[in-house]
Length: 382
Image 1 (cartoon, rainbow, N blue to C red):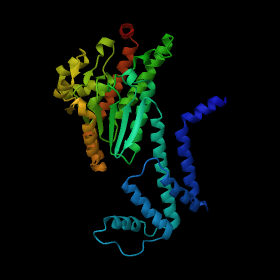
Image 2: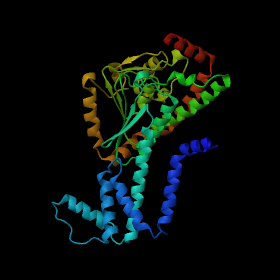
Image 3: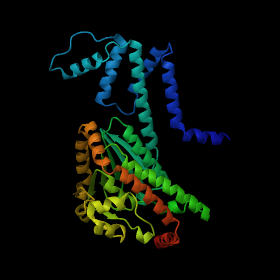
Image 4: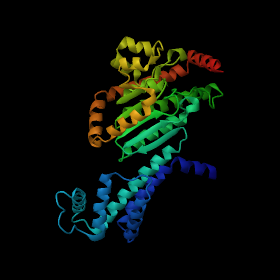
């Protein structure tokens, strides 16, 4: 029983944290302990694992001054004192706010920062998916090089969480996905079809689970709020290829390749590729990839508009680091607004296609043809 309760708590840990925060907020206004909570928040700021951005720092400065000394005093600094003027304006913005109200606002911001940091840290605990915040870049890395970065069910869930956490992270403006090792990603790990599957009923449950996980995974790409950049460091297979049309920028190494062998595995396209690929490259070129399993070189992927640009492999890491760093410095709100303008044109259609593709793929998994193809593939590997 205790084990069950422990598992329940772990599964719902974030919900408990959020509930605890809400309860704390509700008690703030009726607590005589606001000053000690404020002092704790000031201390917590110094211990955050990631420093807040300049905009949040200024907001906290203004609230701290208002909470400590009340309304702004003195004259506004001169025109050339840019930092001094920014601090003065931030403080002055809170004019008329009581010291206790300023403390409560300060505490609320710190608690949100702590929650965001906690969410990112939890996602980064999944060994095969690495999460890094580099300046204004939210970086997600496939970290299973010994298995060519093939995606397990656990990795799918970690990636879904990572996309969500990136949306919530106010310190970053772009999201980058890449692979560690020689491969970008080998697609769906075929062991997903056999793990804990001993009976026909187990296989049906696996297919149900796969449909749900896959739909949520693709939706996470469709609904992502920030510019999404793929750095294709090596071969890409299956769903890692079909999803590329949902990225806003795809930069490939000249050693990258792109393969979607659905027909030979008795499966069907996903990642909204039945909709996006014909738009990108024309119907017959899309059929070459999605029906007839044609494997593309980086140059061929570029010609078909699947890839934005190609970089020599020996300088891929250095050049892409410089590029994404420069892009991350663009105004973040403008990036988000413009991204949504472009995405919303096709968003409803993409969501419909996603749902339909996942339902069709589930039926393929349950088909005799698919199971025979997977057995043939597995025996060839062994």
